Image 1: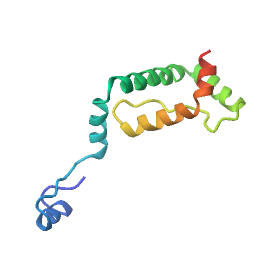
Image 2 (image 1 turned 90 degrees about the horizontal axis):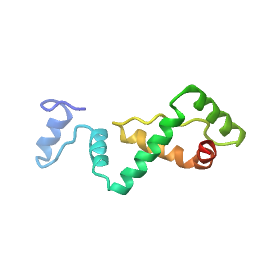
Image 3 (image 1 turned 120 degrees about the horizontal axis):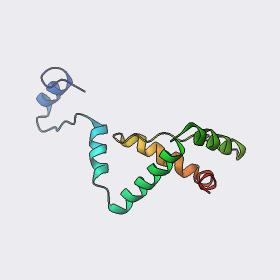
Image 4 (image 1 turned 90 degrees about the vertical axis):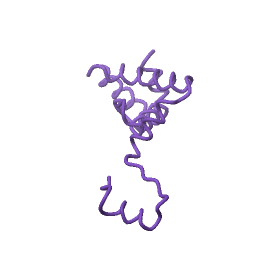
Length: 108
């Protein structure tokens, strides 16, 4: 975040008056995520439901951690999904994909 009248932004406007300025990269990514195609939204929503089911209570979390440990997985836990942050969504989906076999076995 930069001030609008002093500092870096003001100096850059003097040098190059046609420069556009963005306030928050994460907010822009969150807005872009809201306009996803329906098929990708459905995948994201289903993956969030799976993660939330596993993280819903401590018993599920402990059982999943134990299962991942028994299967010698790289990860032993899932990240709880955060609705507003796109970067967190990316991490959740990455770990969920890496643990897809463990999640499938856990849900069975």
